[in-house]
Length: 200
Image 1 (tube, one colour):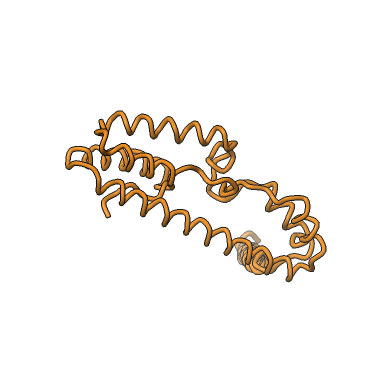
Image 2: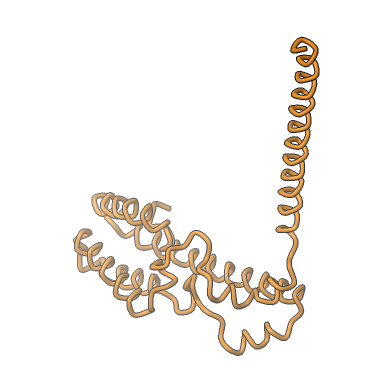
């Protein structure tokens, strides 16, 4: 009797195993399809998300930014920090009286510019205007604003770069070596935001 039941038992076990594998396979396929659909859905703009875009852009910190980064400092604190770094650099350069005018021109050009912070907020008027727009119009408006900000930042970086090269040309070889060392130290730490203090 046992010999007759063995094939039946084996057959049932095989069927059960096959059924479990089939169900597992279907579940995995459904999961993968679900992930694919979810990924596709995330790439499409959602009306509800689009309607909240100005608020999200205003309130959320920028990507790859620190909450205590330059964009979140008040202008007075930024100015004090820049003045401190400049004073330290000037002391290390040991400038001559003849180099003082070049230094004054350089530091004036390197002053932080109001409104150029990464974390700047939209004015109530700007938010009111954005709220009147449809989602596609709002997306286009935000794109135009980003383009304008990048253009302004690029122009400021160019200005800082030219001011730095002009001042650098007035330095002695020993001073240039000191300046290069300071740029490497500060430029690598701050991402070179001050126009690039390097040889031109």
